[in-house]
Amino acid sequence: MSSEIAETPKVFAAILDHVADFDSIKNVLTEQKIHSVLILARGTSDNAAHYLKYLIETQIGLPVGLTSPSSVTVYNSELKYKNTLVIAISQSGQSPDLVHFATAARESHAYVIAMTNDDSSPLAKIAHHHFSLMAGPELAVAATKSYNAQLLVSYLLVSAWTDKAVNAPQIIAEAQRISDDTDCVAKAVVNTSRNNEIVILGRGFAYPNAREAALKIQETCKISVQGLSTADYLHGPISALTPETQVFIVAPKHMPAEAIVEATTKIRKTAPRIFWIGNGGTPAGDDIVLAGSNCDDEIISTLVDAMVLQRFALEFAVASGFDPDAPEGLSKVTLTH
Image 1 (cartoon, one colour):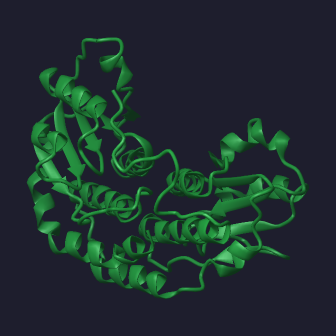
Image 2 (cartoon, rainbow, N blue to C red):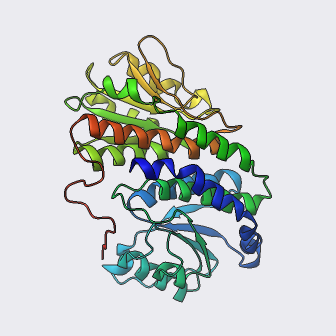
């Protein structure tokens, strides 16, 4: 897991070396008369799907939903997906329920784009267009570099559709800087306890990373962690907040401060110390900052900052006496049906 997180800058460089490949789908939204988008994913890839959802909704304005594979695999629903773009995201491209749903979507006249880490996978073959994650073999059960690649490929997809320039050197340089900072999570690891509740919050582009941080800690540390939107947290779960609750807020550089001010104000009344993941927070008092990237905008800061939350999960697992490369009860490819 450690070495695969460290490979992220190299993976980013490989993907960005092939940025011209995205010209092949540059006009797909108009050519296919796309009215709506659905994203097909599970697990870690589902968190990347939320990032892509925010990208499309904020940069293009199309309605975006997340698929329910069980509608096909369990309930045998007949899909009617004309003028619908389905984007399948998967590390392996093998999960039977994703393959089944993608097949049904294409047969119902959806236009299918896939991003996987295996060019010969079933999902890659079903799609009209496939984009490789170029992450190379990923052996650790907890996905890291492939998730980071999914975020970057999502960003490049939407950049192609919106004619947005991509600052490749900055993305690679900031990823390398984060990779080289071996102490970026040390203070947070020392000050976090497995015995007290951990809540990880984010909003907007930070929300997918909040979900992913919670998942990574659960996968590697064998504890239950909530990953929520700050807005959703205020709509009920905050009632369980205690002075011992360890609140992490994902805050990439350039995140609008007003997005989380209400949440932080209410949280501090009960749990005064906040752990910040990224450089966009408003630390005060005894807060602890897990320093992130300094990219030009929130969107690319988010995809680089994913490395920080992964490093925390890794080092927290090791400090807790667990082997993050072999979490009990999990396998690399989950074949859900």
